Amino acid sequence: MISTERIIEEMQRQLNYAKTADDDQAIREALTAIRALCQVVLVSKDKKEEPIITPRTMAISHQPRVSSLDSRPLEEEDANGGSIFDF
Image (cartoon, rainbow, N blue to C red; front, side, top):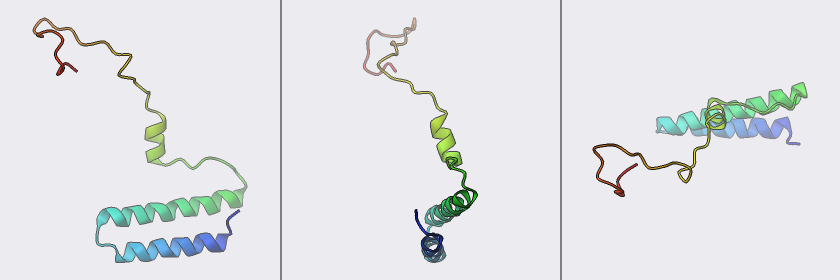
């Protein structure tokens, strides 16, 4: 298990990166990393082995998978046959 001290050091590194970053996206990513590190410490202190759920993982895990091999071509009256541009 990673020590709390090591996690806090990583949080400090991410905070320093966020302070010096010029790009808003880079700042958001550093802050998201800090949030995840906080959750790791808090979950390990509670001894609950629950998965960390973020909005990004929720969006990915709840989307049904659709395979393009299972779909049939759309047939319309105005269509000109088996065009490669029929989606």
